[in-house]
Image (cartoon, rainbow, N blue to C red; front, side):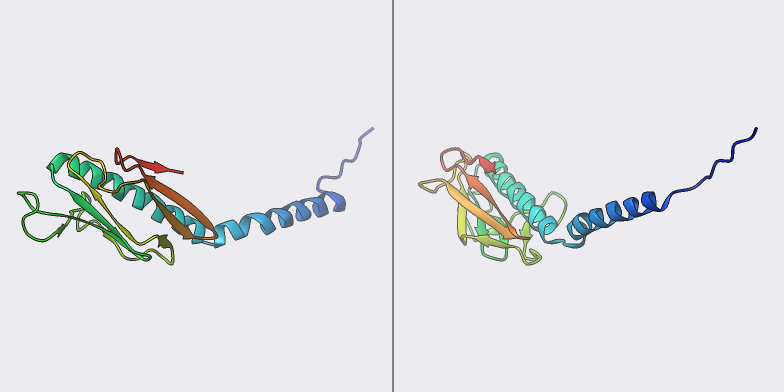
Length: 154
């Protein structure tokens, strides 16, 4: 005797799959649609990289390097050799151009400050400096330890 098997899905199985896909779409799609958090993380990582590069540049050149931070940009400058002669010139980015950032995609930096890395790699500030990167519904902080120039990501 032959048995007849139906191939396919039942209505209950189809409804269950539709409900699961709907729940996933409600929670996952908004994460991919909004770029604010992605842009904020990019600015945070780039600023941390710029601060670390400024410290390394100061150590390597034996001359101070300044990082000027405003609410909407940051830039690196140093004095040409011998140290302190002439006006500050932009620090060259290893990937080309000057090490500046003026398009932060709506991300803000706080507070506006200037950090100077001495030839020893430490900052000339009397205390640690904390910089907030705000955007995409979140706030991340970077702390520059004054005594060593270490850039601490949190």
